[in-house]
Length: 283
Image (cartoon, rainbow, N blue to C red):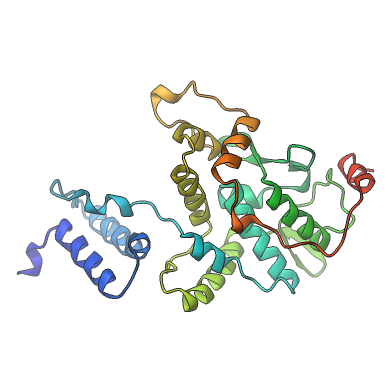
């Protein structure tokens, strides 16, 4: 066949076939070929050439959303927690997954945005200065307490310190998204040695896609997921749909009743109820 006559459908078919030949799983094929296709489309788009192919089959629709498998996220979340950086990196990935937040929303979180009372939540500062409150699962709170012990010893829950920070010459600054991205990619490279299916392009936003997909696969209503993710609207007809924090918590808890990724290992210290109360009230 003359290569100049190849259709978009045929090109994708060849790429998928090659990925399958190389042993990639169905769930990771789109994740690995998407960056190249996007660059290809942008290049020709700038030349005013449309790549729309009305004959494209539905076979590839399933690849349009990136996501990680349970095994892949477990492998990614294996930093050396014997080091401070390892503790921070592990909690960063857990927090990204549990909240389904955008990376900048996570990096903008301050300690005072987190509530660890009987109904733990975090306030996320989203796009357009729109805030939303999302629940934190109990195992995430356990990881948070471990993290606070290492990175914020003595801080109260009223503190305006950044939850995730980097320290240089004794000065703390909010972690930037480039730092978060590079750290996650490092763990992805390590995980890929154990599991070739780990996508080549692992980025912070992938945790958001993965969490949303897992909740959807476990039966969580799409409208609820849309609001939980902070989307403006799912469809015009869904604009009046509303769910408060507890409805979200109940739905997430039922959908992910037992999620090994969020389970924290037992901590090697204890905090009394009195100490917790003092921190909650800033004493």
